[in-house]
Image 1 (cartoon, rainbow, N blue to C red):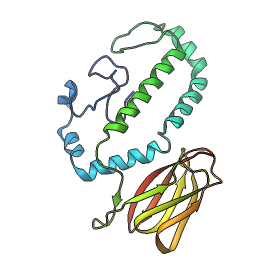
Image 2: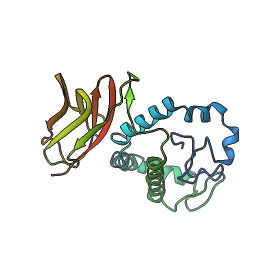
Image 3: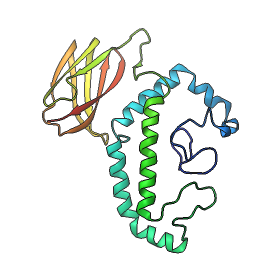
Image 4: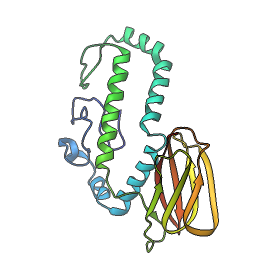
Length: 220
């Protein structure tokens, strides 16, 4: 398996079993990578776009709850196939070539992968390239946005340094739940989100050609 930055999960070479670090730099295998990988990472426009995309995905399909649900659903789907697979290739509890860890059971393998991914996500959250998500189509506009109270049990207020054009709210799996367009621009908008269930959502905020994402927590 590969993560978004090229670290192979649980492999015993190139430090692929570690949930920390990037393959483009600081890894003894990084010398085999194309030089432009590192050039891109240190290009602010690219790095900031990656940061923004990471925030968007973390609030939706790459939220930890979404990933755990995906793993749980596919564990059930693959459980019978896993039995046939391990009857054919009995590797449980062994360490085959190029693999750092193998659990003694299928469920153990699933738990091993899930734990690795959770550690990896935490590390990426703390070490993501680029700056906070702020995609400006107009380079002269700098957007400062706050969403409060957060967590909320009812209403939220979105305050921006520029007039707000549109606010969209998405579920963790990327479904658009609410779309609000404002003809008369205001730098502060209050929205009723009381119909949302408890959980984490994504606020997509447009202002003066600038897009910013904010995570919204609902707790009633």
